[in-house]
View 1 (tube, one colour):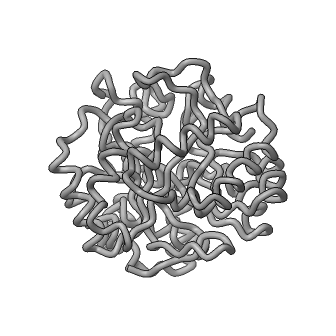
View 2: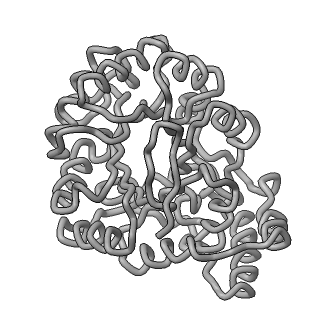
View 3: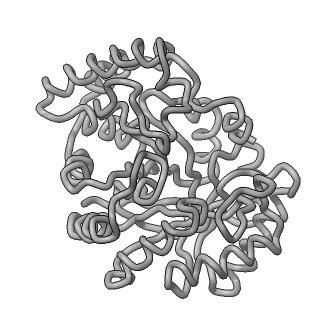
Length: 329
């Protein structure tokens, strides 16, 4: 597996990481612990060194799963986690976002314990808290870096001005936001700012929550699958969007790969500062995703892929109104 540098502070990770959220929530019934650990170990065997979790995934349980699964290879991997939501001890949201410095310190101590590590490699603010100046947030994380509890600061779904203000206080190593063939808003003003400041970009949901992989054919999601609440996966929007995947699949067939591999290869070709983190709980999908790093695309290939899935043709917002209100701040 090739490696890439995130930011200018020395964080080097595998070109493709592994998003771990679905191992404990979000996309239907999660697998058992043994299966999760099997996937984590296989990822390391394949050269994946970058793993993404958060206190909110589970909640809390995902950090424990990931920490236990990677304990034997701790020296070979980078684990990213996140703070930023106000969660009760039972994991229920209380007042939404919370990035007060004292809360950040509490979350970091708890995450260190759940992960079973001495230092958090990359700590993201999960969502911007409008009630707390980002300068205070960056300053608090900077103190945790100085204390040896955190190595690098990251932001998630932050807007350009927030990124600039945070970076002026403490270097931001990576921004994690949704980015894929069918979600390209980051290209407008966020990616340019990241590149100006030397901040790496980590796309989550690089396969459109499985959609671009061809894994969604209808709207029959289980009750605990978040896609059943997202506009792009509902009714006429879903029917229209399925046509885009059919075109992408035909292109992939011509290239001798899967649509998931083509979509990931397209992302990797958008810049050496981009490290997507597709999530999966299945070994075969993991191996498929990792293999996309070996695909070489020509300028004509890239143009054909973008023509097959133009963002203007995507029907529906990526989030409902409540969740959309939390991004780009």
